[in-house]
Length: 108
Length: 298
Image (cartoon, rainbow over all chains, first blue to last red; front, side, top):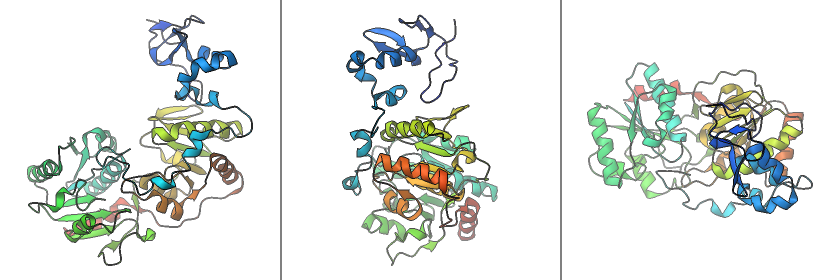
């Protein structure tokens, strides 16, 4: 079985050592499951999904990728304040201190 | 000896394993009690462990702890953070072996269950006396924070960003990318991996060379805070809510805090560009100091 040919990483490019399990429906490269994303019911590689995200017409259809680590930064506008409400919430947890938010056994 | 390192997250397992390793180096037979989900921590640090499955209730946990003590002929129980037991189980029923408390900052230090647990200790060691968190009438020996052995080595990055829990990953991922775009050398520890240009490895344990970056960004838990401090890194802290830990107090004492993501980005850039090493505010001790003190008592 061939090796996954996707090189996209979360932050940096690197070769993937996993075995390929399918082919990207867009560019036909062999890819592993971890590098496959569903776009319009087709399995495509991360690089092709990122390309699709740059097209404003596709953006709304790919909102399921918003919390995917490979796509976080594709959802910031790139000008002005690049951080969104979710980012600001991290700094606005005054009221949560003192609350029993953890399961003592499991933690956060 | 048995080091009781139960608790949420992996911080207790790390601290407990480090202390058990120091006890072993001092000639004592020591193992660490950790939740089943954290067994990889003592394994990576080369310490024998007793995995503890999630108990049904406090009584079941008490039975498990006492059975473990009997099975391993434990002469002393070193209890990390929870002198009363994680579920309050150590204050009920048979006393078991003498206990030494390794106490770190807790928001509920004035609670009756905590104070009751402290009263039953043979020795209470305060690992964070500089935070002034213990009530005045608690008899505890001021010691100081302990970490695993960390040798300072040149860092391959300017900034280490540690997204130790899922809620931090999106924001700190964006931060990492933007700092990289500004020309800084950035490493991101997230979702179990440590990634940097040319580096992709398991995040745990974080290598001292990365912890010794100019700036470390992350939560204000015990281990990250003091490991970064020991290596002279600026700690830009994002204190996180915890049921017992007081990360806000620790961050205020040792780190730098900000109130927005853009302020965070600007502060990190300023520290990387303009600042020297972070000032030493507290001496971080090798775990052998605790081991020696414990062995002198039990």
